Length: 124
Image 1 (cartoon, helix red, strand yellow):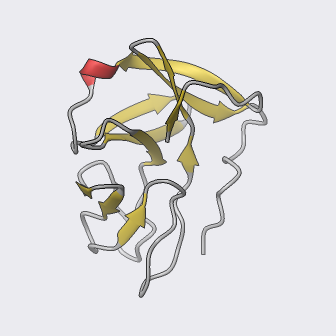
Image 2 (cartoon, rainbow, N blue to C red):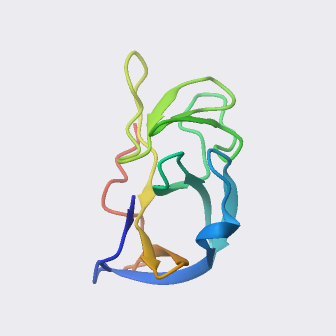
């Protein structure tokens, strides 16, 4: 979720202006080797998730539908909570999420300094 305070465990990369992102429409962002789907909710919150479906058919998430703070996987219609990447019942799984930092009107995505996955990567 978007924040105005940087987490010291992440390196932040600018990906555009807040106005560059349409509400409820995903946008694909590539930072190094990370492919990220960035979503802006109707209340203005920004969420960055790994652009990889946790579903058995695979695919990407960027084309998913957003309803409040839930993302519907475009391939298998699983519901994913964007705040933490958790797949909601009756399905199971998790998507890696990344912190989003707002600096004025500029949007930045945080990538873990260790070069690994973010702290909530617990795929099943």
